[in-house]
Amino acid sequence: MREGGPPARWESGAGWKGWIAPAGDAFVGEEYHEWMKSEELRRLTASEPLTLEQEYVMQHSWREDADKCTFIMLDAEKWRAQPGAGEESCMAGDVNLFLTDLGDPALGEIEVMIAEPSCRGQGLGTEAVLMMMSYGVTKLGVTKFEAKIGQGNEPSIRMFRKLHFEQVAVSSVFQEVTLRLTMSEPERQWLLEQTSHVEEKPYRAGASEAR
Image (cartoon, rainbow, N blue to C red; front, side, top):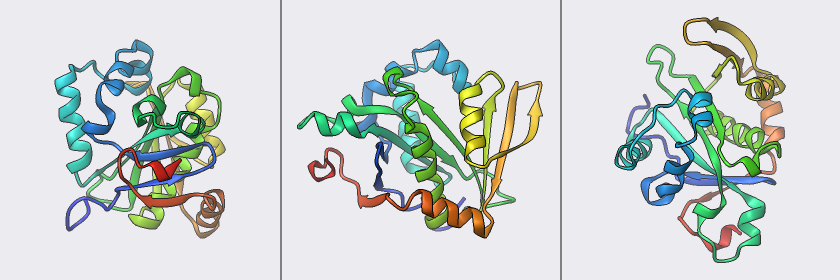
């Protein structure tokens, strides 16, 4: 956990394919709850079904907890094509970074979910993970990333391997694999090059200038 309260994370990154915006109850609303009614998504993310009220409590913790960074992905094409539309109509999924290892504050556990079927296979997940990794490295001092992925989630495993993650463990109990990436100086430079197109802006829900 970072000293001095939650990490400063109220900015959105604008890339080629999508944006990531801070998650919060007013922003996510019922759309996220509808996503998580999917048995497939719950299986892939090892999530339990929640009531809408429980979902709002969890979303509140995303904003307040110092060890969580959760951003909602917006599909940039939808956002540009629908002037005046709310962010909810452009939501594609989420990307998370958890700083929960008290013995190693430089370790971040990263995960990503593309919830909207129409947004899959377009590189949104890859771009969101790269943006979140860049955020972790440049803003939070993260030097190591871990991803824990269900053994059956081959697309996600392949994606993280393409991002230079290497498998370090397999759990037959939890049926998941753990992949890790240590940010050496060459890896850091590679990451910064991959995200050189990303622009950070102070986040305001519904900000029209982001279009």
